[in-house]
Length: 432
Ligand code: C2E
Ligand code: MG
Ligand code: MG
Image (cartoon, rainbow, N blue to C red):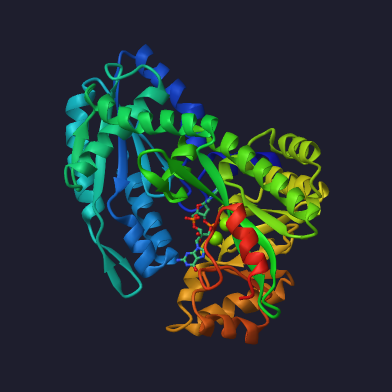
């Protein structure tokens, strides 16, 4: 039973109960094969909600989740006998429609979907309306395997978005050109990584009470020869998409451990935290790689903290726990980054080896308007008895508030943004 349950969790999206991307990759090749054998075609319909982020940002993730559940149910109820629907992640859904005349059928189905999604959804007192952008690829003319068909449907969806949303687009081979520019960025990133154009900057972590710099967060910057400084929000997602993130992550960890050792040699005991993206966390050779880096650089693992986001803990499977415990056994600290913005599964959090919670800067920003909310987050940290770091502190008032509440450390522009190592060293000698 436990195994069946674990299998279910691996193949389903917990929020909507729909099959997930994992399932699509595993099961759709057979579904396509069945079509082939029955002499059928199929349409792959990629559906992405327009401006869903706005719902999350303005009404909160709870409302966003509820909206997704409503829409997932609608999609499921609208399925024909041989059709399938899956949630690929976020606000992306995928439908598989086998049919003798897939193009004709898809045209009808897409119109139905546009109407179906646009129907208002009632959540508490609010009536919400969202629209989708839809991209369609056809089997077998646009591709014979599921990876290619999904990529093509995705490209078509991008074109529908670009064309003004709430619309649909068929995949056309020319769309590969648009995808080419994304690919160019990948190629450039790969080159940047090889040439050392990606630099690790450090933002001080400061003791709230003493004002001493006690550590730093490593934050990556792309110093582009023509375009200048490119922030991580632009290139980290690209790295995640194309798998480059593991290589980048290893580079950042190595640079950070070397820096830690160099500063330790100057008599400065600074704890350095390094961001670990989910993709990297689930990389099978992570532990081995981290161990290798620690050995090569001779860094004391207790002086390195890895920052993961709550989304990593969502699945709560054995592998997550094993990886976390493995990292902990190496002596590394674990921090939960952007705490409070994810699902904050408090029931599980205390079971993980977590050393630090980094209170997301949105709560610090909210201090003026809604201090009770920030207060609640701080209280949660206290209950969990972990080290607390406030992110994004920009004013002395915010700092005073944190001091009063017993928050241990802070980061923020009030003290300094992330800077290159040389500038960081100057910050250490300057009285603030
Ligand atoms: P994060 O880990 O939450 O990093 C904190 C972000 O807040 C940084 O943005 C930092 O510059 C910014 N910040 C710090 N103090 C303040 C402040 O007082 N006010 C405001 N408004 N912002 C402040 P940055 O460097 O642009 O990084 C954005 C995100 O990119 C990071 O969020 C992290 O998730 C990701 N990232 C950066 N470097 C790496 C990396 O090497 N690996 C991975 N996996 N992710 C990275
Ligand atoms: Mg971070
Ligand atoms: Mg953060």
